[in-house]
Length: 399
Image (cartoon, rainbow, N blue to C red):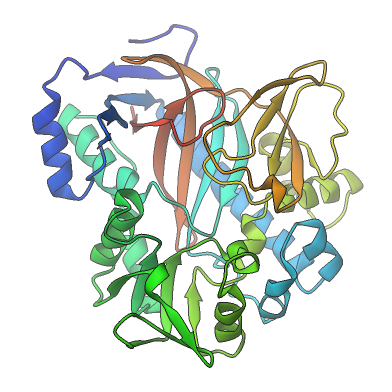
């Protein structure tokens, strides 16, 4: 299905027998193609032109450098930590020296709005605990390969292995390991692709003994990758004990604590503010900001349409869209609204591509993973105006 006015072409596979394909993906490690009788995976491929992919890759590299520079500017400035919604419990560990340039997070994902005319705008960066890795690194290349369409995602595994060879985690953790399909499958794939001997555990089984983190079998954990949002240390029981373990150097966390400075959506407001004031960025960086970053503020100052979201909203939770008159048009009803815990950021609205699928017309969100500092894999998600928990995964390919 192609729309003559769109850069995207949709190759619909919904006519193929689904059950054996779901089974094949299950064997590859993508075990949640169907979730509770719902089709999470839409069997088809959204194909973008090579020049759009190349621009996405280049935009990701430029924005990665811009945001890295912005973090180095806010580092150790507690007034800016506060403005970005960083919980004070994290400030001490964040004042520690920063990781090398470009490597504040070694496992991250940009979310872009790519409009039907090819315009690219950054919506946010998940630099702390991105999921979608299995969909992008395992499912997408298989789906594209079957159709003879090229996938730019083949190198994701190598970049992940290179990152973890340096970080050397001894443990990978998520909440509800073994029962939460997506998070469990994600850490298992990361461990498999790393080639290292790493134990998978449930965050809820961990305990802290005078700054030493242990699992349910009393094994000491020293280097841990955790799909656990670091801002939750401020609200979770035991969060302060975990923070103490990190501060005293008894636990190394991956992504490292500084990834939360990249994760805060407040950083986009810092970047836009610096851009407007003509500070910090050189001509080339200013050009990238003007092209790809949406105006963002920590107050709702827009006259036209805009979006508000928690600085630490995830899975679409807390997103509210306002129309040209500044009236609330739609808000996320599925995700957890973390704006009750953290301040909000206000961002100009951007247009998502619209694609015709077996589920009708959906909006396309385009993710780009940055692993070990390299943009290296696209993730397609299709849903409503707000890409939340109810959205679908659809493979993205390049022609």
